[in-house]
Amino acid sequence: MGRAGIAILLCSAIAGMISGFVAVFLLPMLPISSGIVLALAASFALAAIVAGCIAPVLLSTGRDVIRLENQIEEAIDSGSQVTLHCGPWLRPLADALTQVQSRWTEKVLKLNTRLRELEIRHRLIEAERDHAETILNSLHDAVLVTDSFNEISLTNHRAAELLGFDTSTAARRPIDEVVHDPRIRELIKEIRSSGVVTRQKHVEHAMESNGEAGGRTSTFDVTLAALSDGQSGVGGVVTILRDITKEREISQLKSDFVSQASHELRTPLSSINAYVEMLIDSEAQDEASRQEFYQIIKSESDRVSRMIDNMLNISRIEAGIVSVDRTDCDFVKICNEVIETMQPQAAAKDIMLSMKSGPLVYTADADRDMMHQVVMNLVSNAIKYTPEGGRVTISVENDDTTRSVMVTVADTGLGIPPDALPRLFEKFYRIENYKRVAKGTGLGLNLVKHIVETVHHGTITVTSELGMGSKFSFTIPYEDPTSR
Ligand code: ADP
Image (cartoon, rainbow, N blue to C red):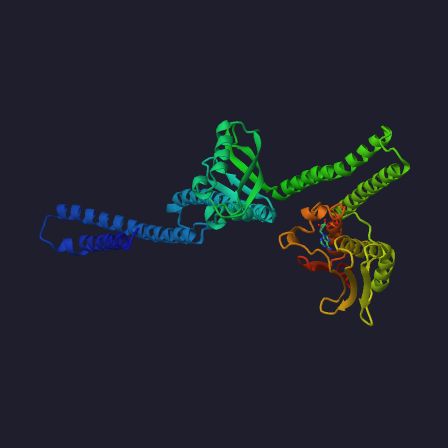
């Protein structure tokens, strides 16, 4: 009920009162028959009574309607249940409105609870997604998950780095736009189109590491698995790329090593076999020839056993299972012992074997037997590849810049051709032309390098001038850096 309604009610009340006044006071003064006057007066009086009675009722109802309207507005604004107060005329309406209001309040409450639940669920999903992404990003393998629209739904940094895309923009983009490698795209499509959820596939695939031409080629083990769409079809595909380049290289190295080792062992063994057969066939007529054959068999079998020892030592070091007995090693003493052992061989070739050292050479934390073997191998090589009348000099000094003991074995021998220098420490590498000069295994320098660098964290270097001689230097830290 608006203000206009109230005004009309007021007017009708006033009109009623005026008609009552007219009927009672003015009509008797008019010159009309008393019967008509009486009738008019009665009707005016009745109108006045009726208007006078109804007007207050209408007025109070109008006020109630306004109050009700205000209370409903207040209830809407506050959003809570409000008890509606009004006069008896509007009570049924107020009760009906209260009921409607309580039902709506109940509905709103339910919807609010549902909304809160959805918010919590949304936050949980987001947290789970972040968690899954953190786990995926900590993996070294590349992971790529596509959905039923063949769009990227989940991936990790390693996949982005490998396949050359940006993780921040890849989500919800078609795989064909994001992944440039055609083979990976093809494999994913194949798994999707197979329609078998339990399907898993392993494929070995070589590709450029950064997904674009020009990068380093690496070998990957690609695992593809189909994801269910919730019914019986394929919803998406999980693709995992594991870099197996190193494993492949190692297995290649192993098979190379086995074939080289068997080749190298076959030479002395066939020589032993040949001399034994000649002895069996009595081809050595006299004692001198027989002694010569025995000597050859002895030296070849020594070579075989040296080769096997070296191979075992190298593989123990490479596998990290060598036992190292570290003590304070006096390198001057070790070098003097080697000189004493090798002196007869040097003398046989008229080679001057000598040693020089500083006034005070520190000790180093190292395995004594291994150090002895390193110096022995270098001195033995120096004598082998130095012609008669040459010189082999060992020097021991402190290298304070690297806090190491430095041992140098220098000879005035054949020297090493520049193209052979980078390959000198490889397993079984021997300079072709020197094979006639001396017998060897081609494993000595590789073992030396492993003992110095892998076991003792030192360094080994070689400098040489063809025809002028060679200089091998190695350093061993005073203290083992890994024990600090
Ligand atoms: P080997 O048993 O054949 O001596 P090493 O591994 O000790 O095996 O040496 C590898 C090769 O390096 C040798 O076969 C030889 O050709 C070359 N070499 C090593 N030391 C010297 C040296 N002091 N002078 C010249 N050549 C050397």
